[in-house]
Length: 88
Image (cartoon, rainbow, N blue to C red; front, side, top):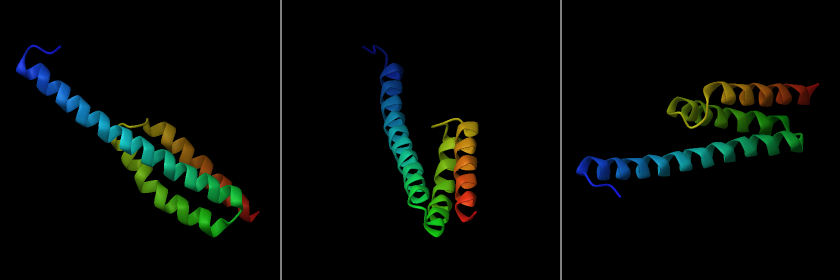
């Protein structure tokens, strides 16, 4: 248990930060899933619209430290490559 006022404050801050990060991580997973389902359906226009909506959210998640920037860059690259392959 926290004994000092600063330790109690740090616990409050950590709880708030954790709550925000959980929400960001959930949102990040949902947009990735929406792009994946659009790709799986084979609809190129829907997949392009989904990835355009997902990119800012994923980049924001990378900037906030929710996930590593290279991990999200790799995911976006692979998704966009699969979208380009839909036309071929």
